[in-house]
Each structure stands twice: as structure tokens, then as C-alpha cells.
Length: 181
Image (cartoon, rainbow, N blue to C red):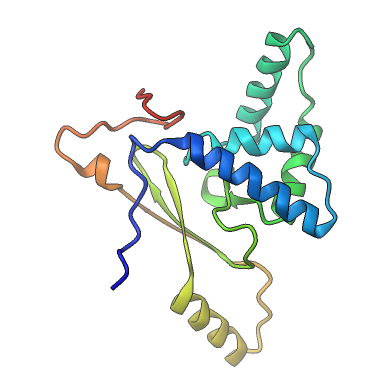
């Protein structure tokens, strides 16, 4: 019997997630003939630094601070980041979390699928699920009603195991492995 999938914990090490996501993005883009520019790659990297959804303006701030730190100066223009996000969504590398107007990395960009998410209301971590039977049921119901599905995003709000634990390390926004707010 296969082991049940677990919700990522606060102590989760994101370094491998980031590296795996960037490697998968390179492969997916190469296979599709799409160009993963330095900016698109950096936006994807920032999104994957955490399992919590991140907003476009937070991305703009992080990118702008990084440019200043590198001596490149100048603020990154919002349309530039929105174009990068649009590309990443089109390639299936990122999902938009509608309820938060924010973005999260796609765990399986090489597979066409719908967005099903468990989102912790306390720490903000979002975990992507495979649709399985739910996906099949929704598609069947839509067919019965002669409805063309263009996009499905289901967001389930609740509390993750770490935030439910007595004295658990609840935090407002996870960032890097081992950090706690």
C-alpha cells in the first residue's frame, strides 16, 4: 500500500524544491520551444522559495531589492513581472491562487492538470493536490450539462498539521527552510 501524501511541514527544506522546480522548468520550456529568460527564471525561483502564495507586488519588491543589492539599480516595472507570470502560467509552471491574488509553483508542470489546493489559513502554505476522482467527476458533470471547462481551480482553506499542534510554530508567511516569523 502506498504511503499517503503529507502536507509540507514548516521545517520543510525548500532548497531541493527550488532546484527541482528550476530544472523541470528548463526541461519543459526546452521541450515546448519556449524561452525561460533570466527574469522568468528568477520570478519562478522567488515563487518556489516558499510554499505560500506570493503576490505580484511582493515579487516586484524582491526583484527590485535584488537589483539594488547587485548594483543594477532601478525598480522592476510591474508589467515586466506580470508578463513573466503570464508566461509561467501558460507553461504550467505556476498556478494563480484566486482567493489571494497570488501565485504558487506547480509541482508537476509536465502533466496537464487542474489546480486543487489545500491552503493553511494560519501560515499560508499552499499544497497542490492531484485531482484524480474529483477531476473525473467534474469533467463528467460538465459533459452532462454540455458545459465546456476552460479552467478549474479549487482552493480548500483550513489549518495544516503544524499550525494545529499545541504550541505549534504558527507563522504568518513561510519563507526559507528553518526560518520562523
